[in-house]
Amino acid sequence: MKKGLLIILSGPSGVGKNCVRQEIMSMKKIDLTYSVSMTTREKRAKETDGVDYYFVSEEEFQKNIDNGNFLEWASFVGHRYGTPKDKVEALRNAGKNVFLEIEINGASQVMSKVHDDRVISFFLMPPSLNALEKRIRKRKTETEDIIQERLEKGRKEMTMTENYDHIIINDKVERAAQEIVDIIKSKMKKR
Ligand code: 5GP
Image (cartoon, rainbow, N blue to C red; front, top):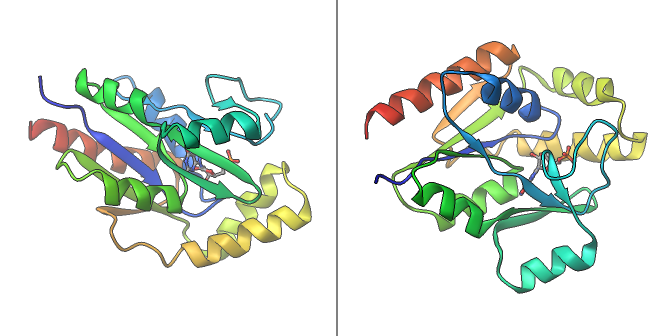
């Protein structure tokens, strides 16, 4: 059995990775398995444990680092986020195409660790800095300090596009999602 693809969707905070990911995962004609990350961040009202994230304590997260359980992990604005290594490997070995939605530091770790030709990376880019700020504010989930911190991070991150296979402009969620899916499908055909 051919190993499943490892698809990385990354980009600055607030660019809309989450919306694009959900749009992609809702498409019927493409079979992708989302890798649920572990985080120390608090659960937001609309989120479900085990679906959006595995919400864990700092101690539990640290235990997972110490045991080498993460394919990658990163700190992001005061919290830690990580991708469970064994799950991703097991899914790919079973032929499943695994989808990661992670921030930039973690994406670099995955790209430098996993070298098979079944990895595809996407950098999601906002149409402008203004658009990024509007999106972050519209979410209304963060305090002003956190918004400023996320924006500052976003500004820096917008220049970190090297090493990615594809740069996708998120001008419209449906369009960006379709562009990504078309690229994934053409890679699937190359089996
Ligand atoms: P949020 O707190 O808004 O859900 O996520 C903050 C950032 O962490 C987003 O950019 C999201 O893509 C990223 N993220 C989510 N899961 C992971 C993960 O497992 N690893 C890394 N490195 N980043 C993650």
